[in-house]
Length: 562
Image 1 (cartoon, rainbow, N blue to C red):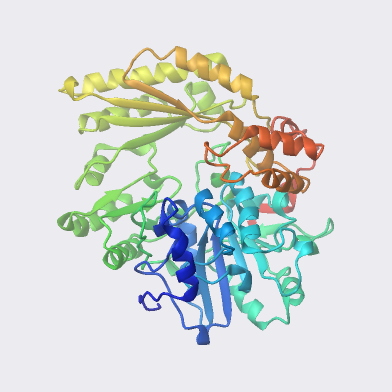
Image 2: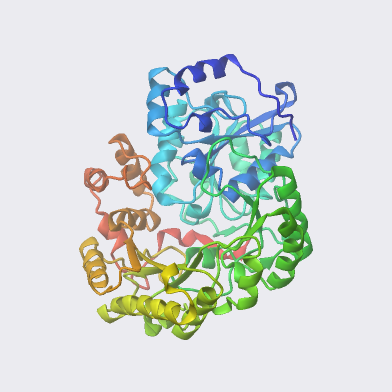
């Protein structure tokens, strides 16, 4: 761990001159409690760990925290953070000729050895290109020289890396905390970029686009087999600006045994592996002590599936409750939510409850393998309402395979039954209730049982939205729906092949960036980019794939382990 002294370099002085003209200057200065600094004389390899979105989102990302800490444990390696500057900061940087810089040293990342991107969302691809351009680095691998930084990418999007393969030198397929130090050690021992890439291409879990051909074997993802003995950050950086999830975190397990047919994470993060409650208690308490946070989140794909949850909650609450520290379980399933669990998690203060039935009817829930019954969901809501909760959020998808209008209307019917449940489980109706239902457009993702299905059209999604909206008859039920326009482009990018690289670059050159932010997303820009490249997003997003059609991502094996 480095020291925490904040020094004002000449580079920082130049940056400071523009900070009074941007909205959230604290996200660009670094110097937070817990950041890792190292002496330049001791550093042999500098790595820019880039998150292609804002500081407040990237600093909430557990994967970023893990890789940042794991690499900085290495002697001679300094891993520094880089986030996408918001549009106002980007304009100021370009006007002042300030290239993209890292928060720890404020040095331009074009002078680093490695630039590593965390890609967790397809609509961040244009931000990756924008960050490379802002850094003064050529976008395409073939345009970069041997002295340019090596561009690496990892994250959940890399289970289909082809759409961005033209821009990245090396992809890490799977979990990164063990393979990343291995690759950095290999880099330090290599004789230049070409030698490193040649050697790295032989490492299980690594995809080097420039060295992979049709005859190469499938690439098996990398996993961490023993979570208890793997690296986990217990001295988190305490942000200097407000972030989305400002809290300490522990990770209960990886993988999922549920098998929901639509869920990419459930089908790509296996096998199911857990941390022991003793290790989690230790990591949680140390993280809280090192950060001063008043909330600890227990994270996983489905927190209530952790087999030792009662034991863990009791051991943590005995430490947290006297210190007024809240324990939050942000991912619960209705079929194992109990009075006992509710009483545990609300000992300090109540948090809102969220359940994801995904579909309104039992027929459709069974079809997608989301085997939660209506009785179970209403029972969980009754437990929550009886225990003093007055707000429940329910998440659904529209456009799931085989969905009918009856399935859509069943969402409204279920919401009204939740409202009736509240009326029968509360002694004070004046206290009010907030039931929020949200829908997003189903996106067929690679490596799932629905990977060959097609997405419904924007117009059809909006018709189903109206059908559902018109059937909600209570002001106590709020209905929110996600943009189908963004869903179309996300589906096209997630199911695309290498041709999509031209589209992504064309969209970026036409101004596309921060596409995950509705105020910046422009469907017209993307449609024009597809047209310019002679392609159609509906071909990638809406077309059903025949069983004998070879899928672009089939060279990645998510079931095997490298």
